Length: 221
Length: 221
DNA sequence: GTCTATAATAAGATAGAC
DNA sequence: GTCTATCTTATTATAGAC
Image (tube, rainbow over all chains, first blue to last red; front, side, top):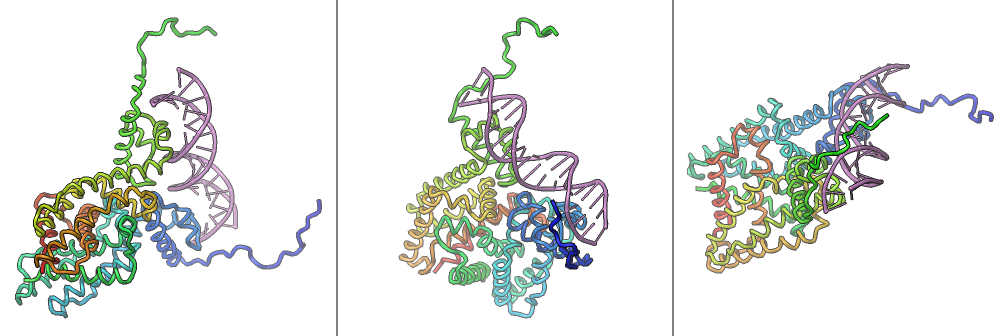
């Protein structure tokens, strides 16, 4: 049987060889990994699926990150780095104590609401007993600022008689984080069970106000 | 080649055939599955590992539950069934409004604290977008009572002027659940990052009091 | 640094005897 | 109803060319 292909192939390269750009490739992989891990969990995530989300190949993932687990750790550090960096730039010391608390609560609420990937990966990491985050001194050191900031606001508020004395800053951080986090992390079961939509704007605005109110009432003198 | 086996085997049965006890076998598998799914997640859990936790075999798991996913759904229904049943038996209507709220918060705190498996499986289910719980009308119907109970307490409290009017019962349930759940679900990352032990008795007692206080201050007139 | 192809292994599910 | 052994497929990880 004769070869039916045309004698001269056109000069079009059927596969575009990737331009060498290590840093961009690394970032590509990292962003794709965030979404895959956030969606599927650590064991559920497929390295093949991450590769498909990028413009590069599976081989490159192992080349840059070594293993699926190391890639997951890089994802953790990226997500925690992002929230702590924005948090540190809030300049809460410029506001009066009650306004500062309100702003912090609103920021936490909005950030968690807008960063579902962070919430999901944090949940996943807890399922794994936090064993990966424990190996990251980076994340630990990034997280000191938020507690220090709360402590300063509480001290100022107590000084002017606006807040009660003796509130533990880390406890307050726990109270604020709980609500802002849970509302996103447990959205599916809560919505399904109670037949409501936690994502709708009215509910969101109501809950944002509720946690502000609850926190302020809790610390008020 | 002659058969080298001894002519008469001893009457000792080398393997004890399991006594037929369908209901016990089913419960065995279910309890083992709770622990495995709670520890490893849905994709992380291994059917082999579940079989090893029981006194039965992998074959039986498929025999009784059909598939890994159906077994997981049975686990969900068991865990939600347990909490809702105890919750419904609290008799909060016998207490004055503020005492009733306090008792409900303390119950929720204690139950979540003592049922880590429930917390973990609920987290896992949210990672999976609540797609399995959505297929369980049983869980939905079980969960109506808690909101009804809160609504009744809030109404009584508003009537006697102890509570503000206009508090949404489901929102309050969300506020209470958030704190009690998060404290357990995110224990690992929170403890690691902030270098504290959320499991220690003093922290636990302090947090139990904090959420009671916060809720009561929030609804108080 | 990037690619395709494949090795090695793990895990869900089932067959078939008793 | 229960058992052991196995089939089949999917997945992590790597080899080796360019």
